[in-house]
Image 1 (cartoon, one colour):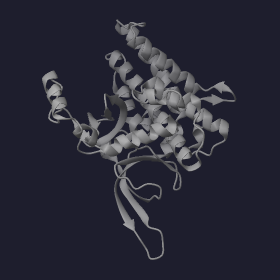
Image 2: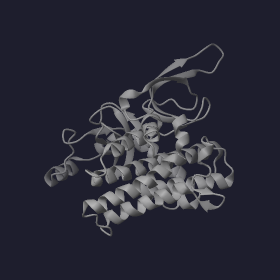
Image 3: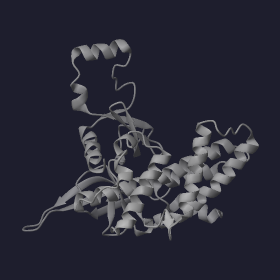
Image 4: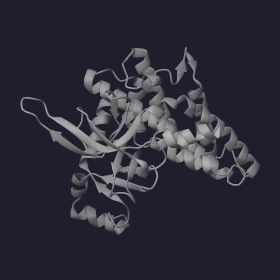
Length: 329
């Protein structure tokens, strides 16, 4: 890919893709082929995650508004898959969700996604490219492919980068969308009129949480703060909460965090760049432990401690995931 095109990805693609691509592009193929391959695969997974979350958000929106029938390809194992989603599972959500929406003729927020996986009944280059990268990532993880020399690592990284560029080129329309978060809401109420909610936050285009553009917009369909949205135009947007959330205090630094599954009864969130990770516990659930249970935890060495790790208490996030599981599972 030309340097100009690579620079456009870093500066204009949504933050979850741009930040990881910048790291991958900046690593020298000859000097750090293993690290370069690692970040190429991370960038590809981040792209699959973003598209998968968009597909789920479309399904959730249509289910709530029109009570559509969720396809069995998502519904049958949704509660199991959402507990620990990885590269392949996000791809499955994206593929099955978008193909279903295309087949039913549903009006979706981002029409460019309609033929993302299949074009004229044939597999798209996007699907082929990411399928190849998933296959390679899984082969490395299960030791079916051993990249034990720099030559092998360099070859794998070079091939993988070509596949990544193919996939990202198909997502070029994302340069025009707005990915950002809502930090505060002002209510404007005029006599004999419905209230308007002025949402203020930042649009994150490019490779840094610190490069956000101030966002001020009147949106009507939700009233949550720390919500991440992706906006197609003035009238069309999707709420990506609770799969992405903005958090200032629970992690290591203020960041947009993505949902990475569950650990026991806790939700795990990982920062896209500087945020580190944190866990979300259900306060009501945790408070229900009696003295004997607390003692057993203490003796096992597993007693809860917010000093030990970053923990956020939020029954609302747990309730939101329960609601999504009911809708889609």
